[in-house]
Image (cartoon, rainbow, N blue to C red; front, side, top):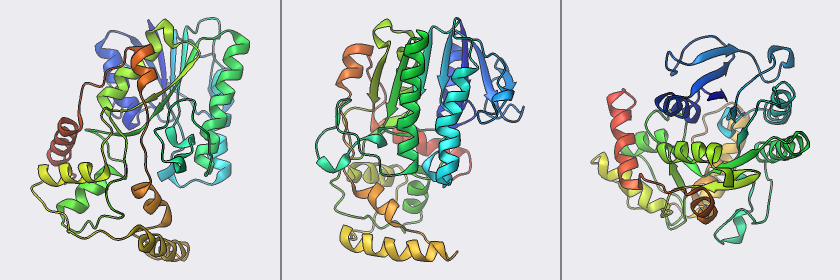
Length: 323
């Protein structure tokens, strides 16, 4: 079966491609530069750019995984997020061989939901868009739903929680590991907030289930690990595997928010800003989601728990010179 992947050189995409190759799929990947970074030799590289329609030539595959996106840590302008996340998926859809596609899988984000309710979020929960990234990812979902329904293309939308694992060199978990190793990480808030993670292998399993299960057609799914950990649990496990320690003092959230606002101003002036209001929010707000629908409809069962996931991630960072 032929599979086409965008975002194949990214953290999630590269792991997805390796699993697809291992399961004997015929994989093509859209790349802006024809270089085999992180990709197996069996992958066919197709040079193109989502924001340049003329570079997308009649893409043909049984399954399309669309993972490419402008992400929050890229710090793009609103116009750039719209160009990549909304116009990009529109260009991709319009240049696909629609008669060939058996499934179109869009990777979106749980960031579209209203997290202020302090309730466990599910697929029917209230939407609240607070950034250009979230807005454009939500609009991309709408584009996919409208186009695929008009053309009769089966689709599924996957909204992962916070992904991590070996090979993840993005800011976030890597910075946590580094700061804790150096014994300079000071926790924010009380640490009891839920911080829903997903280990990379679990997410890849869910993506393939969504592409192959007929029950997944025209459905959206939140995908995360189970059980959902608290920030304290994550920090303690990172501390344990590194044989480090946490400073036994938490910065109250209210003070951290004030400090973050000050650093926002410093950052705009081009000065060092190790903290900002967005990071404070990210570290302290509750992020707890239900994966009941994925378990029931997809048969999704996250196999790697937090203890194993943190241990594997630490060993990869250490063996590859990141710590």
